Length: 543
Image (cartoon, rainbow, N blue to C red):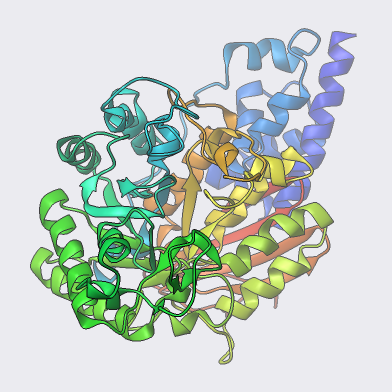
């Protein structure tokens, strides 16, 4: 009975591997040579010969990224395959070692373009009270130096292990509640700790080789902002009255006796007036001080799509100034929603912007079993046609963040998490992972967004995390890293539940082998081909 079960498992694996080899465009000789086995051994595996060593079979599975599928489908108690191999863990066979591939091509890019960003919302992660008014609602601990939990609870080590090269810290400066209602740009939020705590966190990330972005909330402030408080007190006599767009003949929702422009109609978010050069100079000095005091590497610009383009250009001039000072790119990453992203992403604005257009297609294509949706977006944005919009640019790609439902909640089938992250890392642009989502935590979007920004004691590591770390490694140090970081995009095939595309850099495509189209490396070219389906992801580098 055990023998029959083993033979059946081997036949199924052999059939699957034969299909994957065919889809990868490999001959038996090519795959056998790549793995280091004979062609006869490979043929026996594909026939389901149970006499082949389990380690050899699992090696072939690993070549196609199918180990997790095998582990999930084998019952170790009743399967000879399981008894021999999986109970002891996947065998570490002596295989041809992957070499360290040259990375000189990174010298022609700025550090951000080849990075993996990890996003942390500190007020949530560290368990701060929801409001900065002395109340305790939402408080998860009594620590007066909550911010250093990022170091002491192991988050820096976790981010480094995951393979991220940049961390984005959402608002850390004094605010009324959620961080986007600033009170003081120069004081660390008392709920998080002190300036020394923040510097210690940044230094810890830098020591781990991870760059740091702060969140610049320069479109609006909270009603507790010191300059607005002065206007409430002195009204038209305040020297800061022109920092805001005030209607002295109106009234606010709070009965102030005057009205003021808000962001998106939210009465406690007071819009800043960027026609005022004194205000702009003040905010420019804030950015310079953040860089000088905390040694940050760039900024996320909140609601960049709402910022005056002249002010955005002024911020870019400051970023260029800091780039020259640091002798490396001081990056501006703008939060944008929809429209033509080139409006906010150019030499006089942001270096990169949020890719909300692709965000919707990423999860929606999985839920609706319609890969044509995301395929249309990817081709429109980064294809190899003259009319494609952002080819050669590096948008920030994500499957969730602090403003949208957790992806494990958004997907109707959690089995799609791995292929979805595979697609995130395979598409053009810079991938971003939101804290906790790398091990699949959930969170609905409700009023206040507190479920999206939870307090977590320590990072976790599971099979999904391992998968994302492997994707990060492919982007950072594999033979196909150049293609993944700056390669072109060319769609090969799209069906409702399948999307096949190629990414290539530094080379050109040739046709050989009796007219069969193949990819061949020319000089230093690197290639990454991928097949994404709704229930599995496959990717491999072709030498």
